[in-house]
Length: 418
Ligand SMILES: [Zn+2]
Image 1 (cartoon, rainbow, N blue to C red):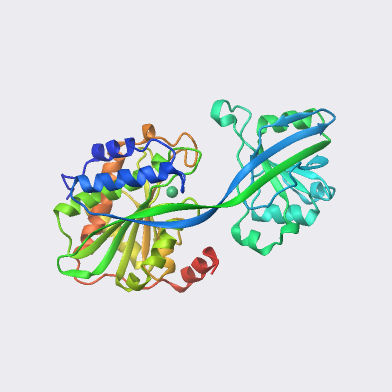
Image 2: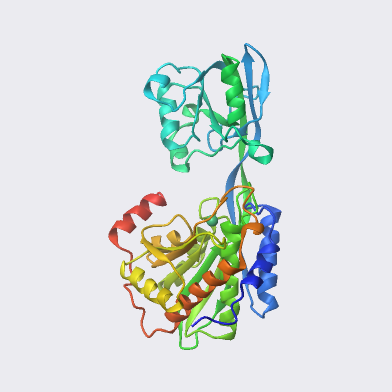
């Protein structure tokens, strides 16, 4: 049953060309797009680059200093989408509120507050309600060294940001665990926080390559994977491995023309909020009626792990995929739910969709490199997905309802803030 011309080693060689950080909107992402197109043309595939603009926040300055009873600046990472302090920062009393429980937060009014967790929607709202004027969050562990000794931060959700006016916003930074230890031990009582950021416009792009079907060319199946990475690491597992898997499958179908049309899409700016796929559905709106199924890959290629296929569509798709996987002898399980990757975007537009996902180590960190990938794993995932795609491209009529269950529709509207 397995296809001899699917190669794990070739996928490894491909991913090895991308052992660099590819944050959306940077020259590195553009370089990656060019490399993907080069690979496609090396086996005779034409492709299009569909560029799109997006807005993102850039931190100009993030400083956190204890000012009393001693003075020291600590390495800080700024939170995006939460406004600016004055140029010179804000100085206020400092308090450690641990997990942000009610008792700890009952005496933080007018203060800069340190909490244990990355601040997201719920904690941000608690801090606002408690009257904090700024916040500091803690990441890392007491055994970190080297690059792990760097602090991390996040961003306030766009919807929350949009719902607040500028005066309500408070600013925050992340610091490292070991610095938090020192700050509390030395009895910090006052601090100064400076955070300056601006919204900038950047350009990302999707790469689209199409193999027309021999008999049902008017029906389209998509195979998709994002190729951008987070700024923390070169994203081999997340998700150059996925990009390699659909490249290998594209190679296969170039030689074995499918009955239905297959479209291969490498999405940019997934890590910025599925921006590539969201641009795709806008640009291709008039064509979406022809789409039958989206097969997305996000997180793949590590050896120790298992395949999970997240299905956003009718539950019968799960049994169908399990049946097809059984034919290959390659293990997998299914989950019938919405999925935080580009497949969600297709499902939101009414197109049944799945994401092939493999658990693994080091997502969104500097550990996510090609050294942790495995030809064995890539080969098997490509075999599995290729068999699914080939079967669905060939079958007389699509074997599942071309609609999204009501409960998922609701969740997707919520997810996309519609
Ligand atoms: Zn990803």
